[in-house]
Amino acid sequence: MTAKRALDLALGSALLLLAAPALAIAALALALRPPRTRGGVLKREIRLGLDGHLFELRSLRTRRLRLDLLSRLPHVVRGELSLVGPAPLTPDEAARLGPAAGHWRQSVRPGLTGLAQVRSRSGMPWDEPALLDAHYAEHHGTWLDLAILAQSARIPLRAALRGPRCPGKAHLSDTDHRLRGYSVAE
Image (cartoon, rainbow, N blue to C red):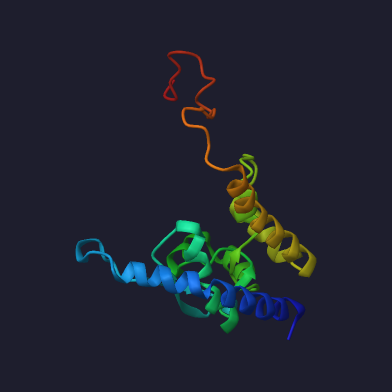
């Protein structure tokens, strides 16, 4: 057993125990929805894991409070996912990336969060997810995993502490600074 797997088992089991009541309530709420809005409690998708093994990824059909990610914790405990790693891909997504990307992706377990997920929130244009996932696969280790987990926990906590955003307060996009009459087609 590696240090990474020991971290996944210990922290994954503890998080699963802490999240179990919220997951049970969310599953019950999803099951009690009106029939016309029902899509089932769990979303099931085939994903590629370590060494290219296929597994069925099951998660709650909700994004509220990131319960869909927490509902994947049993996959971490079973060893199909890691807490930190590249996002789990479908076989079609992996085929589009090609054999070179598939090789390094199969060398690490996919994760609930990862370097690409944490850095994608930074808004920096050079943070390409595929490059960040490749960098993680080459340089992964316990300290990098702990740093990514800390950053992953810090982002929602900071948003919760900030409270709701001020209504009407605008945020600039890359199109806000363009000259009047500017067209991409030109």
